[in-house]
Length: 129
Image (tube, rainbow, N blue to C red; front, side, top):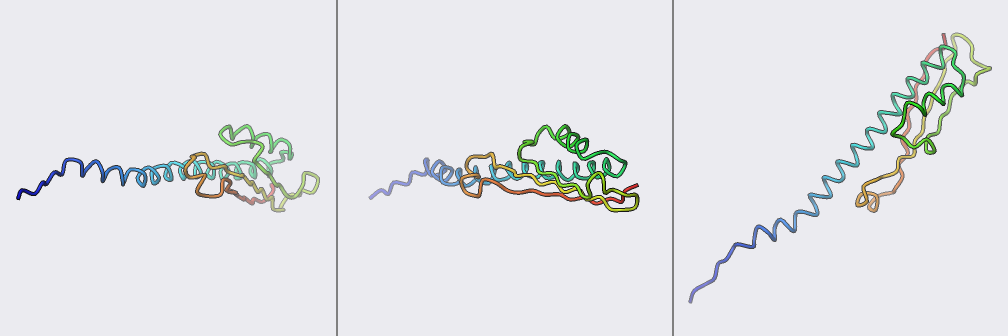
């Protein structure tokens, strides 16, 4: 008796099994890169906003600057918290700027597996000049 040993389709079947897992890993890496980009943006914005606040800029000027310098972020999802208020700032006090951003997952496969919204936040404190 002759045993048939045909392995021509074996590599194709193995590739078909591994491909979805590989694509999921690649999509996760891409999504994580987008999220890190948004986090780094708000971290830099909080530092710049604190710097503007300690040299005498008003709340509205700081808020407008943050929105202007973040074109890749959805302005409706940004929440800005600056303390103390304009009228209570004195030289030598500490100015705190907190920025919260509700990041929405954009890659369809990843967003269906996890909660679609992740809150990113950054805080910076500087002494008022």
